[in-house]
Amino acid sequence: AQLLDVRLEYLQRRMQESGMSEEASYDHVLTSDYAVLLAEELGRNAVVNDEMAFNIYPSPPHPNPSSLPLRPPVVTIMGHVDHGKTTLLDTLRSASVAKGEAGGITQHIGAFSVPVPSNRNSSGSRSITFLDTPGHAAFSAMRARGAGVTDIIVLVVAADDGIMPQTREVINLIKKDSGNVGVLVAINKVDKPGLDAESVKKALLAEGIQLEDFGGDVPSVEVSGLTGQGLPQLVETLSAIAEMQDLRAEQDGPVHGHILESKMVKGLGPVATVLVLRGCLKPGSHIISGVTSAKVRVITDSTGKSVKLASPGMAVTVSGWKTLPNAGNEVLQGSESDIKKAVANRQRKADLDSSLADVEAINAARRQERERREAELQQANDSQRNHVEESEAGPKELRLVIKADVSGSAEAAVGALQGVGNHIATTKIVSSGVGDVTESDITMAKTVGGMIVAFSVNVPKSIELMAARNNVQICSSSIIYRLMEAVKEHVIKLLPVII
Ligand code: GDP
Image 1: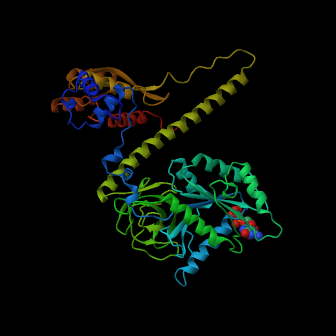
Image 2: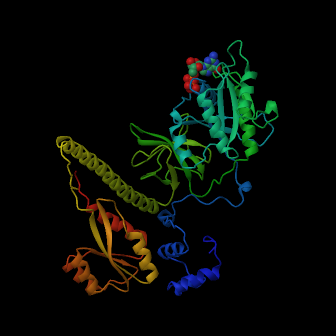
Image 3: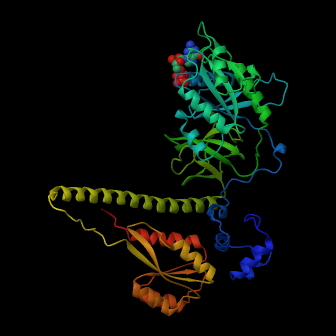
């Protein structure tokens, strides 16, 4: 009732009216099909999330975030081309390795961690994770999904070039995300002689970036990625911003993260960089991303060192994937069997979607071919008026006989199954009614050459046998979206495979 924004008594009354008297008791757990029906009755569009059933979903926000352990900030460096982003990242990366283990080799994994010197007498973060994904492809993909994985954006502006088109793009992005993401301006290339960093700052102010120097809240640092000048201040300032943001995440509980990049590695197979947002990733964990999954084998950090644990804010490479996961995709942890089921479920959906996409492509090709033929005909007969006959007599039909347990659900099934498909093949509902599947339903389905959809009703064994003898298919489920998918599959079978 809360979700639907109605009073409980009202909801119960509506349920009783719809024949759900038993379900209307206050402690009854509704099945998804009834929940969908109810939501639709109340004018809502319900989305059934199967993955909830497999426990494969990000856990809800922690009720008391300030009790959680701190995590390092995730920082993205952005700015106009040639303003020195790559150089800056390279210098930061090699500095991080030099300070780390002797003999460490920097590995390009899409992110790296820079330690924050502990001379600051504070509880600020002790390291910073820099994202360094090529072309920010993964970053854009994650953003497009509304996944704000970046805590701080460093806007790099070359002092000798000033504000350029891509600088403005980043500024717009910052303005859109304002409140969710911290900002630091890095005026770069200050090693060059005769530069005026002040004028760049004024130009930024004119673009609406409220710099601290002018009384705003956006800090700026003057740096040189080439000489390393100003980089300690950059790291220091990022740490201070992170401290204000008070970034915390649960370290226990299932892992939630994102793929930054992935590639095949000799001897290891598919390897992906995972940015961990919540939970701790360990060897042996079962994780899913898109339609692939992994039992985590080896975890390494950006210096190539093997680690036993990756906590929130860390980006690490993970081997053990069945196939290459896609950059930007979400990573979730679950039990081995839940992950297996979720992968199968996602694969089935992906197959359905790609069949539909194939159909769209075929349609487009057929349309084009028809248009080409029509144009040819027209040209050949342009002296006389020529009528081109439609080559098809309407779409192919999957005829459905629907039976449901109550009239509300029959209506819902009709609503859900009507018009599934496209202009080449679609559903047509021949009849819909309440009650178990009967002999006359089979006769009707046979007569029209259709199939029976049984929604939350019994299909007696004798009826099943009769249907089989008569070559009439019965699709039976108490879950409406299962029926929708089954019907979709049948519609797809009606489509021509080749043009
Ligand atoms: P990106 O396109 O933003 O990644 O820029 P790059 O890092 O590739 O740098 C573009 C050019 O600017 C290269 O020729 C760099 O050597 C040069 N460059 C980058 N940072 C600095 C800097 O701090 N000082 C100077 N003088 N040149 C720089």
